Length: 352
Image 1 (cartoon, rainbow, N blue to C red):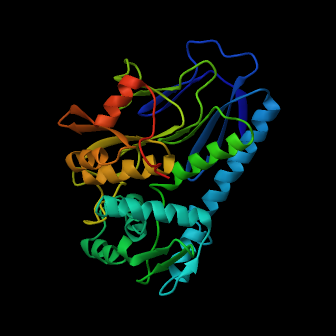
Image 2: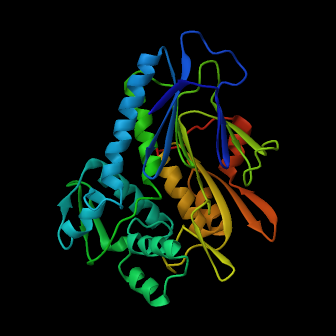
Image 3: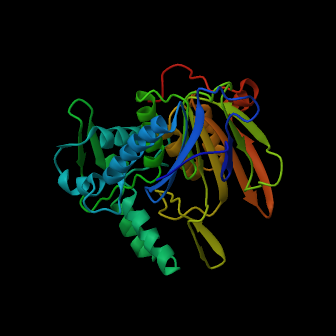
């Protein structure tokens, strides 16, 4: 773990976070930063603390929690709970950890709400496409169809009262890649808060979780722009606290074949990687929601994705579509509201 006091600026394309940039920070609190590798990416934590010892204690606890979740949700580890549960719970209910059940439940709700655009059981397809990217060639159509048969959120059954999971079909696999990092960022923020560190930012690749605003500020300053235009002014700037921001797009994980680009994001219905060059930024109260929603809306596409976003009072969405060298942007009504009031306030029931 690397620990340091830091300037309050860093970039997560296409997000830029600028903390406490214009007003002086009270002398009682200083900004500290730490970075560790987890879940196949770098987790970066920024926290305002009274001293380095307090910050160090917070970083250690937060990273330990992230590591614990990595061991639960990694589909690269055959011993992880995520990897084992589809065999253990085949044909009969099995009680699972609170963390796995919470993620499975959130995934199921999103699957139902989006008609299957998000699917925790997509593991057979993601494993197939992971190998395809390593081989630099498209998977065979027969292999795709075989994987599709082993997917399907309707084949996963949850019992809230008993906290159990049951699967209907053999050889199913779970993949929490589209939701686990957001959940882990949420949990890290909660750990820091329990230690009295209430002003923090946790970043995991394109996923951000924010707690209270930096001292003297109304929120963490979030700049959202199109396709890494770091040398130009931001098109949108938000001041956010107690919120989460997730961005989903082709990024570095894609497959080029036959003059076409296939994203690592897979449509569960077709079994194919997305070909549209779309970047979705989702903002919600919690990372578990924003992370999964960004993936689901990428699959739904711009029109259906915006329609879904408008049906969710606690979800704001910004979509960029790149075609023929041109970029078009689309904003949900909730996102436009955030541009005006510069704060994220929940409406109605919490999303968690």
